[in-house]
Image (cartoon, rainbow, N blue to C red; front, side, top):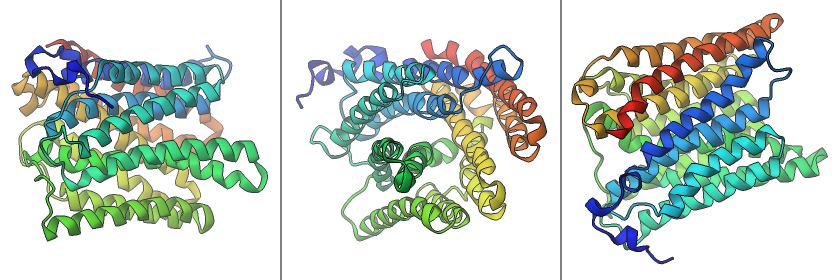
Length: 393
C-alpha cells in the first residue's frame, strides 16, 4: 500500500485531527458509552419496554472502548515509532465504524454490525502492522507491542467464531461462546497489555520503556510475551473445556504477570497527580476481577464487571484524561488533584457495587440496574464536562 502525500507531509503541515485523532475519537467513544448504558437507565425507570444486553455488550466493547482505543493508537503509535500518521480514510473509518456497530446492533442487524466491526479491525490492524514492521518507522516499539496486533486477531477471530457457532448451533455452540469471550474479553485484555507496557510506566512514573533490539535480554522478554499470548488464548479454551474457575484463574495470572513484566505495575506512581494514581489502581483492578471470579466461581461472571468497569472502563477514562491534559498543556491539572478526577473515579467505582448486586439480589435486579447505570452515566458526564472542552486546546 502506497503512503499518501498527507502521510509524507511535514508534521506542522498536517491537520490537527490527523496528527492527534484522539480529539475526534474520544468524544465519539463517550457518546457511544452513554448510549450503551443510557438505555438501561431508561428501561429501569420505565421509559423503554425492554433492555438489550447484546446491544449493550457490543456498544460498550466494539463502540465505546474501541473508539477510545483507536484514537489512542492512531495518535500514540506514529509518535512512538516516528512513523507517518493515519490517513484521512483510516480516521474516517475509525470514527464512523464504531457508530455503525452500535446503530446496527440497536436494530438487531447483527451481520451489518459485525461487518462495520471487521472493517474497523482490519483497518487498524493494517495501520499497526505497517508501523510496527514497516520501513517508514524510524524506531522499534517496545516488546509489549506484540500484544497490539494480537488483540485485533483475537477480535476478528472471535467475531468469526461467534457467527459460525450461532449458525451451526448444537454441538458447535462452544464456538459461539469461545468467540464471544475473545471479542468481549480477550481483545481488550491484549490491548491493555500491549499499550500498558508503554503508557502505564510513562504516565505514572515518567519511565519510557526502551526500544526493542536484538539483544538476548530483549529476545527473552519478547519470548515471554509470546508465551503470555498463548496462555491467555489457552485460558479461554480452559474455561470452555475444563472449568470456568480454572480459566479465570489462568487469565488473572497472565494479566498480572504481564503487567508486572512490562509495566512494572507493582511499583506505585512516583510522579505527582491524582489521575496517575487512578491509572495505577485501574490497572490492578483488571486482573482482580478475574481473580475474584476464580475464588467466588458461582458468581464469576458478575465479578467480570470488576474487570470491565473498574479495570477497562476506568482505565480508558483515566488514560484519555491524562492524554487530553498532557497534550493540551494543562500541566497544573496533570500534577494536581482536580475535583473532576475524583468524580470520574468515584462514580465508576461506586457503579461496580450495584452491578454486582444485580447478580446477588435478583429480586431487585432492575433497581440495581438503574442505580449502576445512573452512577456510570454520572462518571461519563463528569469526564465529558472536564475533558471535552480541553480537546480543542
